[in-house]
Length: 467
Image (cartoon, rainbow, N blue to C red; front, top):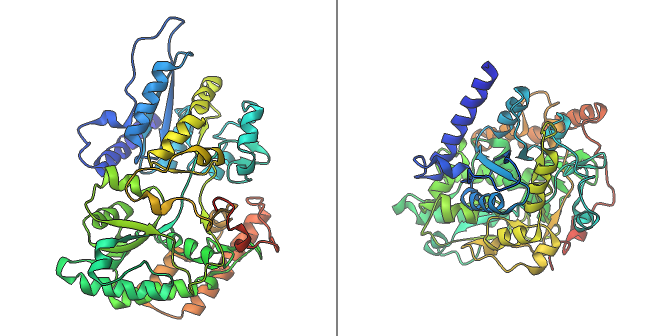
């Protein structure tokens, strides 16, 4: 009973947080769950399935999708969706610990959920055609483990520099920056030109320093051709934070110039979006979920756009690493595996995925969807569409290494330098040494199977997703 109360309280808190963040929906709690018919068609009682997701940008659309599924499926299945925008992974842990796990859920922490025994393999349920459809998108530690498939790809996070066109024009800037040096210069120009309206050139959600830093470093570093994502060098199989030195120096310079929104060290992503929507931020880095955010969650009259990230020296010798690979999966503890699979088939279907892409809720990573789908009409989506400079990378071992690292974590160390300065070479070399020590422990414990790939060349990945 106590565990049930804890779980109910946690879900209540996170649902309220989600509704409040969506703006003006706190008096409409049904927006987080499907509206369903209570009458069952002939053939027996309804089988009710619970579906938990962390996604709120598409909540209203998915409510309608699931309502249609509930009304049209021939198996007497009724799915109820719950949006848990905060503490999602913790909510899943508590749900399984208290035997109240959802039947279907977003695979937000794929490797962690598999290792904890939360997910049901779907190999035996997939048809040969489905396996062929996803064959080039199945990656170890991304959507399968030891050959067992637990989830499938849907959309990808295409990382870009997001910028306020109005502030660019106000500052006399005609195009987004191509180098980190230009980024620093443009941020300063925007801040100076925007004094009368309290606008600043740059911001990021540094309240979560690790997340904020990789939002910047990953796209800039990988497009620059460093072979490094999450601080991990795919070619050498080792961490190398020194590769990020020019990026960290640029962040420090913008902070010293006063070009960053005041208080960025305590800024979370939604407050950042609110400030951007109000026209107070010139640039920040994020992914292709943003157009939907500015259409529904934070409607804005700001003229904004997105561009490929700048590189360290202006040359595009690599590719921007796209985050993709898994979406939803089936609980290993569900008593309704076959019926849960019916819902997954409905979602992992060309028709649904095509419409989802076209409505701009996410950009598909599935080749046959991109081959037939129309360009989304969502304002701002154009700059996020796949280019020859986007590519899928295997997951890095950062998360498992991070759990083994002793001392200050990379995000905290880098943001501390951004705010206070110090000996950057010493800081980055220390991070490299400590994260490689953590990686060695993780490999010894069997937590990751990553190894050096001497032939890895991010330049050769150009054109792998789009021409």
